[in-house]
Image 1 (cartoon, rainbow, N blue to C red):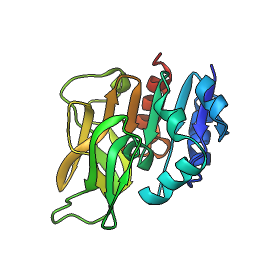
Image 2: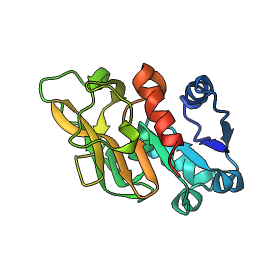
Image 3: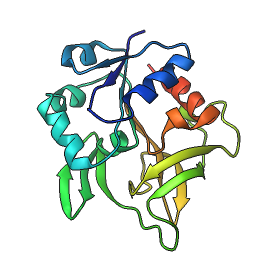
Amino acid sequence: MSLIIVDTGCANLSSVAFALDRLGRVAKISRDPDEIKSADHVILPGVGAAPFAMRKIRERGFISTLQSLKQPLMGICLGMQLLYEELEEGGETTTGLGLLPGRIRRLDTKNQPAPHMGWNRLEWDERHPLLKDLSDNPYAYFVHSYAAKVSAATVACATHGTTFSAIVHSNNVFGCQFHPERSSRTGSQILENFLMQI
């Protein structure tokens, strides 16, 4: 099975690769559109600012490549947010990949600390294949200031002031707002479950 981590120029590329290595999976970090298109599974990581990340994706010719994928694609943290149509950040709106409908907005943390950083519980109404073999009260590690609203694509949510989408899925597209590579056993199981998707 070929597994590609898209080289978006962001800082969490190696940590995602190491997490997959701990699962016994060999992943290649690539900026080659042909390699990405031919992979069995593709992971889109990301940290930092949305405008910068989308500029890198555009410069590297990844937009049409990612939009054309039929195999399972997982966005992680900012990578998940980039899957949406639009992202609000710093008073401007950035056009995303448009693989999921909706707009990423600043998380209304109410009286909670901002950004949302640390361990938080995942909640769901129905079991989904990405949630297979998780405990009933799993925790994941989040670092973010922006989030997607709960929608038809939401598989699991979390609450920090406001309830938001923590895991999403639509067709071949999956996303984790948290960092599975930093989420201990919960994150490892979710990555393993993603790699079982065909």
